[in-house]
Amino acid sequence: MSGVAPLVMVALDAVLVVVFSTFGRGAHSEGLGAAQVWGTAWPFLVGLAVGWLILLVTRRAPGSVGSGVLVWVATVVVGMVVRGIGDGRVPHWSFIIVAATVTAVFLIGWRAIRAAVLRRRSSAGVPTR
Image (tube, rainbow, N blue to C red; front, side):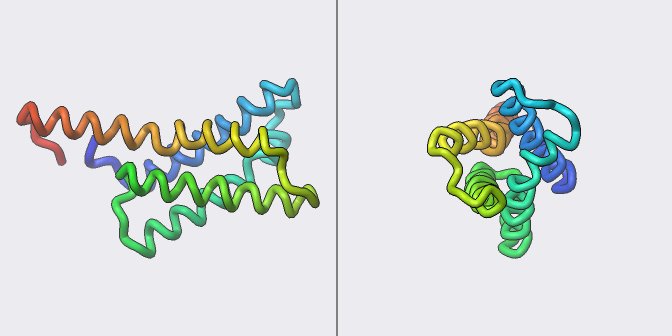
C-alpha cells in the first residue's frame, strides 16, 4: 500500500469528491445525471486541484494524514468560495458543515487507514515499499 502512485491517490480523491456530490444530490432527491453531478462536484474538484498543487509545490508526501488535512481544507474552502461566487451567495451553514464533515471522512479517512495499515505492517516486520 505504501507504493501507491500519486496519480492513483489524486484519482481516488477525485472519485471521492464525486461520490460526495452524488450522495448529496441523492439525499436531496435531486437529479443524478452526469451533468447534474458535475454541476455540484466541479467547485470542489477545483479546490481539490488547488490542494494537490500545494502538495506538489511543497513536496509533501501525498498519502500522509497531514497532506489529507491540507487537501481537505483546500477542497472545502475553495469549493465553497467557487460555489458561492457561482450562486451569488454564501452557501447555507448546514451545507458547509455536512460538506466539510463528509469530505473530511473521505479525504483524510483513507489516508488514516493507510497510515494504520503501514504502522501495523511495520510493527509486524512486514516490509513496505
